[in-house]
Image 1: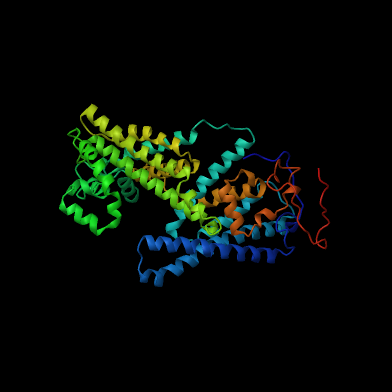
Image 2: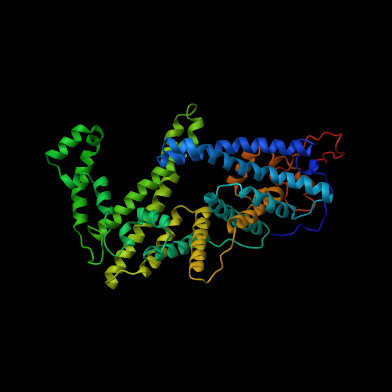
Length: 469
């Protein structure tokens, strides 16, 4: 980060600069606590409820754990927001001034204490998220000052390198953590990581789901099935039309080393088509959910959400990622007459450029940070790197305090979605800071709200709104 134009000690009160809606420090802290707790309860309540439904949690979970976990996470976020503003007030009363790195110095203990309240299994995820956010924020701050320049397609290159490393270890026995390996098997196919065919042949299951008629053919059994399922009656002609092509693809050549049941061509196309459907469907659901508030006023928003360009982009990204990865692995097996973990490295790097269809610095940063985390733990396992106690709390505290620093002094350099989140959880109180007082010392501090001036109680300040420039 960059220091302000000149070192300055600011003697404004915390009312004049920070909690401009009330002159009382105590009331300001209680107001923030009330707003954050209310929103935290909504956010975590929805999150834990959806997660419980997806994971098919029973009544015992809701009776014994749901409310405890919800209360713990709500208390964590409430404490984080409340301690941050409380520390600022305490500092002003003790020191009598503010200076540039106050948000970082005071944010670190506030964030560290709050994360220690949160459940241990969530601390790593939160630390990783805020770490990515802090890196992106620092990059935006440096870029705004002209200190760095963006690399064309830099996020795609970062994603490709991270994907190459991931898929190199994916092809090694026990190369990835079990949870990550399971997800990769679902996306890229289980045969790419096992030396022998998996007991539960994933490809067979996919074939049955995607091409139900290719198994039974157009015989009596198939006709009976379509009569009992009206939905299949509508797609049966299409299935009959594509069945010869599917059969032809299945019987194309495959290399003896390849473990997929049918031809290499069918294996590649099958994976790509499946992931396009998943990507399109996921993005469509997200768009549909975000448009629900306006559905009754504008019903056409449902069609717009389902036909949105972003749906195709995410589908194309995932389809090409899996399709290219599978295709290059098959090509390399044909060329080298063997399978090798290096195939995953090469295929993963090339397939990573599929992000050109769906560029996302957030996805790229998250993937890269997860790779760094994995490599760090591998270094610990072989005794090359030290194990750091409370690393998640340290990372979260530093990262979140950097983000808070930007939220106070230059919110225009924050990720827009995170700025909206801060507005939501604080009842727009972050926007209520009088950043115009800081403009002489920190360039563009009030860029988002250039004309804002608080409605002060003149009994507690002698500040008056400056004339419009």
